[in-house]
Length: 285
Image 1 (cartoon, rainbow, N blue to C red):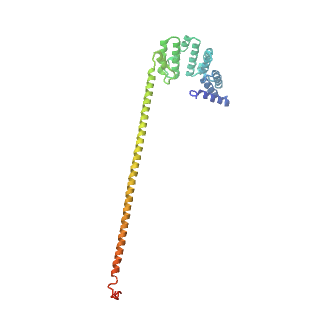
Image 2: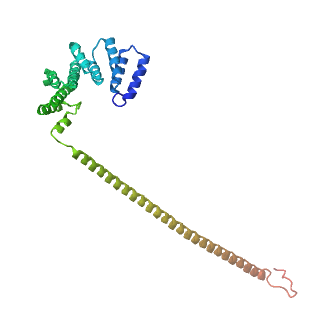
Image 3: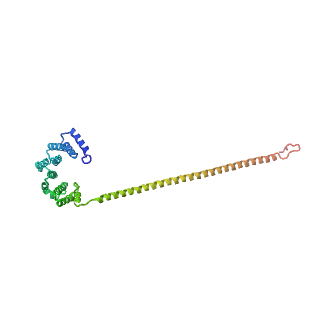
């Protein structure tokens, strides 16, 4: 959390110290968190405690830089002088050297700062980040001493090996050459305008899609209405057909009834044969 939320990191480290104050890693974490938050006295106290607990000299450069921040560059130089460099890793020794040279510059001793940084590691073939930082510090010292052309050369040599971008050597080099990167802002504005244009087109497409959907809905409603009308017509035709069939059935019934009555009358006329003179039926009926 040191890079993104240093205050939260410091709060966690303080909580850890309350729980385990004699753990070296806890005191180291608190010292580094204090350094990132500009609490210089706490930085010095915690990292010195870490060194006593471990017997190491890992963070001498951080302690010396905190002394510089407190306005005590002489103490930073004394830390460099008294350090056991044989116990330091190459990057730790170089970082302490850079801080000490910066302390010389704080005292106005610019030529002495340049001389301090003229070590064999300056021309190392290594591409480690600490080599790029050493060259950058040397270029800064040269520039502060008024040696602009030499400073430009070493800013360029720092940028050549700064693969991890631990410095802004490339930007400093452009500044020395008078190059202004206004085109970057213009290109960004153009890109923003293009994005806004794309958004406008997308909005227009969305509106067209909404209109198409509304038209489709209207067409569906019209189709539904037409279907309803056709169904009404079909139902009316079915009703008329049913009425016609009912009338035909009634006519057939009436015709059948009329035929039955007529046949009955015919049967009555001939069912006894001839009648006698007295009006009685013949015995041989």
